[in-house]
Amino acid sequence: QVQLVESGGGLVQAGGSLRLSCAASGRPFSNYGVGWFRQAPGKEREFVARIARSDGSTYYADSVKGRFTISRDKNTVYLQMNSLKPEDTAVYYCAAGLIDGNWPGAYNNWGQGTQVTVSS
Image (cartoon, rainbow, N blue to C red; front, side, top):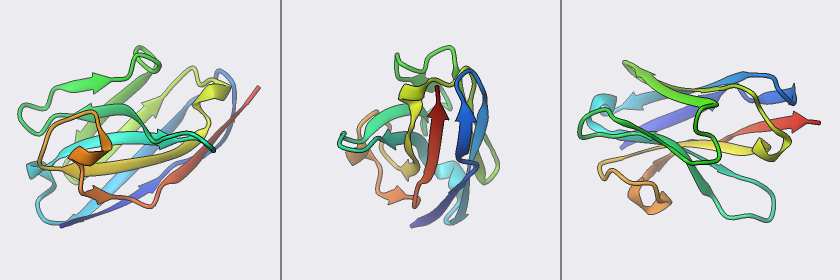
């Protein structure tokens, strides 16, 4: 198992930026694919971005492509969020797993989440 702790959320105006961090401890983080998901009130958890375990390729949801960037550095994965919109408001979760995929079930290690609120 790997333990994950997110940070960096907060309140920002539309058009602003935030950088989320996901710090890992436990098993070697490099063995895992890592994804960011988000969940808004009353909605299902949705895929945002991921780094593949297999080759480090990055993938994004269409709704964030061109605005968000996922990266990793040793035991931390980042999500740089630019040009934020009110519809980006959600709790953001990072997740690690041994299966590469865009669905929550591919990940068996989750952080506690960090709130991102974008005001209009």
